[in-house]
Length: 74
Image (cartoon, rainbow, N blue to C red; front, top):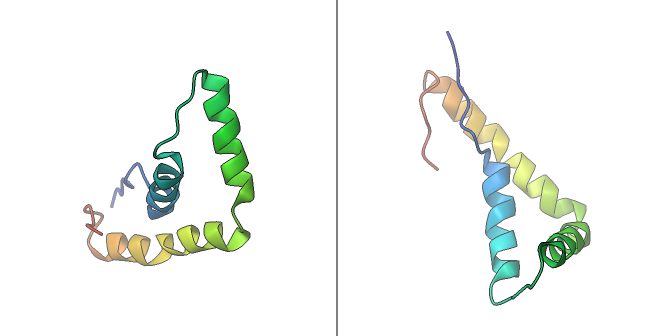
């Protein structure tokens, strides 16, 4: 059986959802400003933030495998 995993893991959705909230209303003049702001935000997150996103992968991957490799909705 050939399984093709979705491009984005739930941990990515977890990360991007919170990052989007952080970025709302901010304006940047240079790409480097954006990079610095995102880097600082990523470093400011507690390890539990990342753990929570990673833990979401396990049940979704299990659903994916039990669904014959077909795409799984949230």
